[in-house]
Length: 195
Image 1 (cartoon, rainbow, N blue to C red):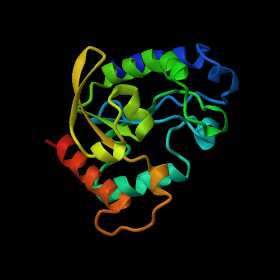
Image 2: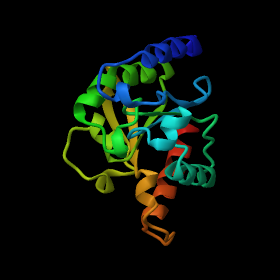
Image 3: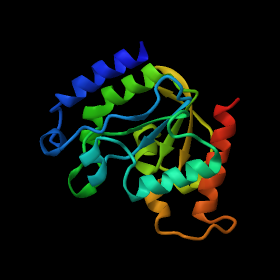
Image 4: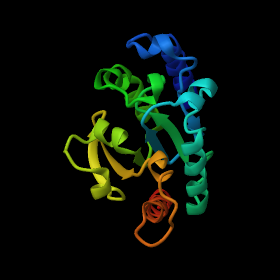
């Protein structure tokens, strides 16, 4: 049932021209992961150049780093996660998607969340966090916290984490470094989704 609903939604996205991004994309970037086994949805910012070419989220440098951290934390990208972005099409020059572009894609995003109905939403980066959390607070202040937010008419558990593109600037794994915090947050997520 989930698979059929998602296939229909994906077909709808492929024809979408609700905003200007639909005119410049190569591919829509709908999702990755297994909708039948996913216990969490990881929501990123927007597709980049590599994602636009392949139609798969998180396949560039940041995606490779994300995969390394998921593996270290014992989270299976293929089984535990369903991965999506706030928008389905690449913004030009990989800029942050405009609020109007996120609004145009919001129905697709909410429908994916409703269909998967995960135990947890993971906001990967500030853009994903700001799409659902309207308080003006830096992600560095609340990363790793379990938030309970109403999304699509349902109360949902959510955890914000750093975006892996942010981590590309840091190489240290010492205690308290962004990479150390990312690993700790993902280990917490692993425990949460295995409850």
